[in-house]
Structure formats: C-alpha cells, structure tokens
Image (cartoon, rainbow, N blue to C red):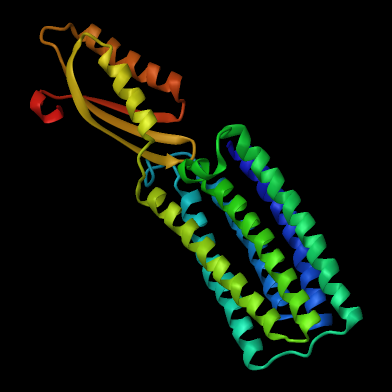
Amino acid sequence: MSAGGSKFTIYASILANVLIAVMKFVASIFTGSSAMLSEGIHSLIDTVNGLLLLLGINRSKKGPDKLHPFGHGKEIYFWSFIVSILVFSLGGGVAIYEGIHHIIDPAEISDHTNILWNYGVLIGAIFFEGASLIVALKEFRKVHPTGYKSALVESKDAASIAVIIENGAAVAGLIIALIGVTLAYLLDEPIYDASASILIGFLLVYVAFFMASETKHLLIGESASEKDIAMINDIISKYKQIDYFGNIRTMHLGPDEIMAGMEVNFKDNIPVAELENTVKNIKSEIRKVNPKFTHIYVESDSILKSTYN
C-alpha cells in the first residue's frame, strides 16, 4: 500500500476513534460501566496511535542526509513499535486494571434508562469501527489481492498493518463489551461487566505483542521475501558473462525501499565496458520486476565457487 493509501486509512481511523471515544466516555459516566470506560480509553489510545503513525509516515519520507545516508524509511517502523507499546501498557494494562478494580469494588447495575446508553454507544461504535476497518481492508486489498492472513504477515507496511489490527481488535472488543454489559444487566451481576473489561485487556495485550513482534524484525533489518531473492537469482543466472555468484543480501529500509547486495565472479578477459553494462542491466532488470529495490550493489569478487553450491 502506498503512503497515500496508508494516510487515507489512518485519517478514517482517527475520525472514527474520536467520535467513538466521546460516545464511550459519556456512556461510562451515565452507566458506571467498567467495560465501557475501558473501551473509551481504548478508542482514545487508538486516536493517539493514529497521530503517531501519521508522524512516522511523514518523517520516513525525509531524504538521505549525512547522518542517515539511506534515508529515514525505517522511522515508520520505530513509531509503529511505539504504538504497540502504548496498546500494551495503556490499552491492555488499563483495561485489565479497571476490570480487576470493579471485581473487587463492583459498581451498581445501571437501570433500564442508562443501559440504553451502553447499547446505543456500543452499536454505534461497532458501526463506525466496522466502516473504518472496511476502508482499511479495501486499501490493503489493492496491494495484496490474496489472503489477508498471509498478506498481513508478509507486508512491510507497518502503518497499514497497525490500523487493520487495531480496528479489528476494536470491533472484537466492542462485541465483548456488549456481551458483558448484557449479561451484567440481565443477571444483575456486575462481575460480567468487569470480566469483559479484563478480556478486552488481554485482547489488546495479544494485539500489542503481535504488532511488536512484526515490527521488531523490520527495525532490526528484515530481508526481502524468498520470492524476490529467487527473482534476483533468476536474473543473474541468465548472464553468460558471469561465472558464478552468491551471497545475496537484502534488507528493507522502509515499506517501499529495499537494499540488495550480491557478489559475482565475472569470466576472465571480459572488457570493462561489457562488465559495466552487465552490472547496469542486472540492476535495471531487478528494478523493473520490483521497483522497491532502490539500492542495489553488485560486488565483483574472485570467490571460490564451492562457497555457493
């Protein structure tokens, strides 16, 4: 997904979360629901997370400088990691705390009038979060037309992944809150509402762990896909001027930037002009197949052929 597509989904998510957070907090004041308060905090955190992702996208577009010769593409991964920490600590942690607090000190079950606040807000929030999730999935689908599960794992667009995962978790959390509020009201037992808050907390902890795990690999320097590496192998192997090659190394510098380095051994007595033209053609072919290879380095080395069997 392009940066423009990522920004569009984030703007949609921020707008939905602002409206939903206001509704949830108002409902929690009237009803005293811990699950509703946890959901309000969740939406507020999602709003802040969206702003941080926008900051990361903007900063990642800065060009190279003396201190960062390959640009600032990885900055989006840093801010995505910060988002995962916020989801874990503020989202999951506060929701679990609120649930435990209301188990120890149960709130009085709301009357019929106030319970309508919960239902109205939760149903409205599910509508807005669901709409935001659909927008994010449609934008994601444009770039990844195959299955969502494998695409989420393979995609290097941390901002888009964060929005989809957060919105998905938000819809699941709202359903949990709706079930908890309903059971608490029908059975006149506030522990169900508090338990829903704890479940929402554990859901957010799991989401944060998934996001942090995926982002960690990109921050450290994750390689290109096996498909891309196989593509580079196929291109280089076509050139008769090359005796053998190997040690192909790749690394994502950002969602739309990949660096690749490789060692090749050219056949003896090849004119310099032909050698230079071969290197130029290799780079051109790789970029034609995948334009994300923005930095390609071909090193001539008289390595032992047995090294790359």
